[in-house]
Length: 574
Image (cartoon, rainbow, N blue to C red):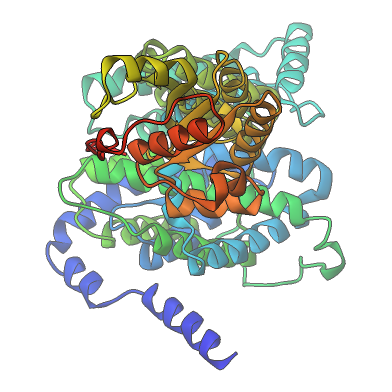
């Protein structure tokens, strides 16, 4: 127990910041300060918007951006990652808010943080590399659609209808708008989105989101447009940390949502960190440390009324593009937002909700990489199918189910492709020192097959059909050296095929059985069936000689003089 505790303590110590991080922070602080300020300007409307969309209010989004953003910057595994509330997490939180209320969301965030820390200690970050690209692309496309649809009520200037299914809520919002149109709200949303999209093409380095939001706020106040409903009062500062929301009796019922939130936080954060690596030269994030940082961030954010957080791809990309060189930039981003929370809350509260909806609509549109989607769809039919299924499941179900469905379909298609690689090919008998007449006799009674590739459950049924459909011979030699992998199902199918052949009077011998195969075959009782009189054959020529001995003793083949039984040449490959 003591040694195990020591290993866990050592693992936790390895996840903490070190001297290298401090040295990187000191390299170019001026550039990091400028990058952090730019990211904060971009993040402000997003934090407000995602807080409103989650159902906990704009103040929750700001608290998350400040608290989670700072902790993830210090303890995370990426030097350039920026964390905070995201659209993907908002999609998951909406139904949780509807079912368990705001306190349930805070509890779920805390539990998810603990789970993320546990994943970091278990070194689970490395498994992110096994998520197929079509799943990621379909996931991103589905999220973009959901984020866009979630903004429809605020963009139309109608109260958000009841319900946790985004398609249903969107339809009801359209119906409400048809009854009482609010063209002012529509104008603000469309104008802000247009400014962001056009401005990004014209001057990518300029934060047009904050420019558009400020302009919309000024117009709404100067023109006294009551139809442009503002965010509402915001507290001047962060609340004191508290665990008053925590209800121990509800932990059991909230475990499943917490697992879903932790899974999404891990997936999106590691994906965002990978994007940051791809935008730089020589940068590589530590996936386990990133999970640890996100875990601490999600443990702390609920204490200040914040929602669960993840690494944010859009903000991380802005951070990299503006020249950030260390985690100081992400820390500055959180500090600037904290100053805004304390000093400018009354001004922020005047921002029209429709303007924030426009920001998030533009963000959703920019999330869709048309080139990547087109390339993925053209790659293979399997990739296109996985992409479409994942996106559709994200829109119709939820993100966790979507990823599970995408991974399941991708796994099934991958197994199908691997299973097709398994082949059972008849190989010619080596003449060795046999005459043409003797070789002809052998060929009439002995057939040799080479098994290539994996012999496992996905390929087992086809293998059984092919092997039991052999011609009328007396001995079948199976060349096993090229079997790449074998599981219990493959071994059982092989045993079944051997028993069926033996019932037909056909002896089955094997050559080149590897140690790993031998263990599996022995566990299901197939090894004894492949070893005639207890003899194993290392090479195919040895198995052929054993088959000939069997046929001679059976009287099927005439015995040949001793001088003609010289050892045939060994095959270079077993």
